[in-house]
Amino acid sequence: DWNNTCGDKVRKGLQEWRVSCCSSSAEAGYTAAHDELEKCIAKFLGKEAALVYSMGYGTNTSTLEVLGGKGSLIVSDALNHTSIINGCRAAKAKIKPFKHNDENDLEEVLQQAIAKGQTTKNGEYKPWKKIIVVVEGIYSMEGEICRLRQIVEVVKKYKAYIYVDEAHSIGALGKTGRGVCEHTGVDTSEVDVLMG
Image 1 (cartoon, rainbow, N blue to C red):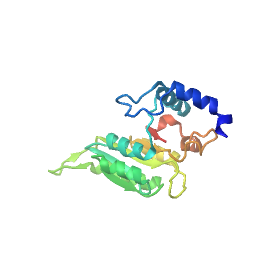
Image 2 (cartoon, rainbow, N blue to C red):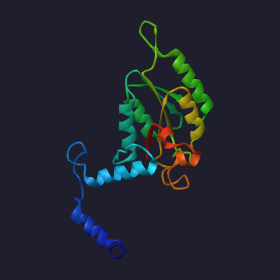
Image 3 (tube, one colour):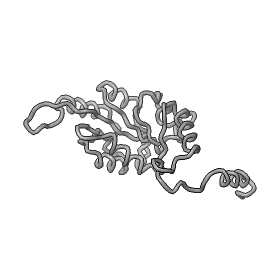
């Protein structure tokens, strides 16, 4: 039972930390424990920094909305999770899908996007401000693992950014549980945004 296995630690934690922050981290909801957790996650994944959200769905919907703005293009795997789709829709970016887990189709979509640019009112060529490719580490509805090594090679070839939703792959894939990056031999420095 919990009282014998972890009761002392729970009681100590309750004396040291409040039960809830009752506000967003921007106001009064950020504690030393949050800071320690973010540093621990960043170190574990080999990233410069980490930001903790309260849930994965909200992470995708709010982060993608901010990353993609007017004049940006989001290229999204055709079978991405609803949270990614809703985040892309909330952004003021243009959205183009590519065939599920298909680096060849992704390359074709990126080539066309770069060649054609944005559509302007007077028909002039205007390049995209940025292009973000969004994939999942493990596709939650299909259970398929992303072909991340191949996807990253295409993304970097066309100087786009890559956002990887690791919600179902961190802890489940890789020798040490570091997710699809570790599983596919992709260094986390090659991925611009890791979510999960």
